[in-house]
Length: 372
Image 1: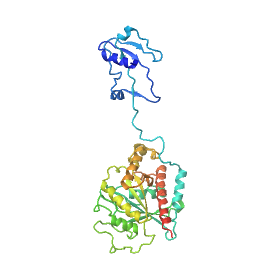
Image 2 (image 1 turned 45 degrees about the horizontal axis):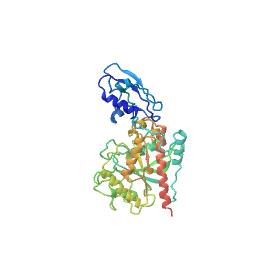
Image 3 (image 1 turned 45 degrees about the vertical axis):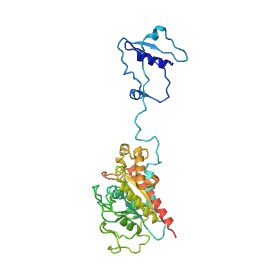
Image 4 (image 1 turned 90 degrees about the vertical axis):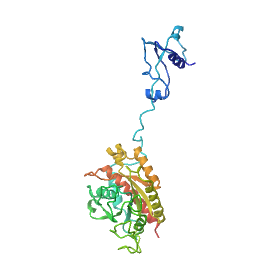
């Protein structure tokens, strides 16, 4: 029997006096002990063993040196101080390393702005890249458009009108917004056009329908068309474009998902998105996604947006968004829209511009795939 076991046995047999014994037990470096974890393993902690008489203290020699007990020592009840251990603190909100590499600086912002401003579609047939934003009601589609334009305008503006209701879509019509340049080119539109439509509901009667969404992507829907589930777009629709050109069509679809609600979306919404994605893919249009409201997902990111790619919560939210859409997370980027702010923030700008740059990569693929 080991000395440690003998001391424990002696302790269990005694109800009178106790003695404190220090046991030399090796433990891995960096591993701590706590009474809570000790009790969960059925071990008594030092605070659970109380002395009823005057305690005596003895020292156990190391196993290599052999015991130094006398016969009278062995007859005395012993009090054992069990090593305290802990499984460690809760998992941190932030990972040690970024799970995506990201650079944050004024120089990076300027480079991204120049890249977006100078973008030209890789097709002589069109001068603008049309990007359609689709998402649930209140996900932040209109806010994303306004936030992107704010970056180029140098101040927070609401280019696309934004509502506050999360149950009904504020946007009712097809609206196309040319993102205008910055500085000397402030009055000149870039080649990027962001298209806003009615939000997708949890059923065909509560928002943008699959039929109408595909009509927009195919280029049949006229600018300013007001959506109504009861009146689907058809050849009889005023302004209907019967033979749309490449410039009328959508060249990339961006799904906008609210990161703070991604765990509460109905399963039916996921089925709607995946059905829609299948039809869009058949049209040869690439799709990506942006995860909005990341500042509401993680407290650390709320106070410092540069922690976005260290946040475990945001990483999990992006995985959940991927499952909802049936999309790999490599297609999904996080953003923070300007909602209550009155002034721009450099790092928020960088994250928004990085999302736009990500979108334009897939716009390019569309033109490459459809080049003659």
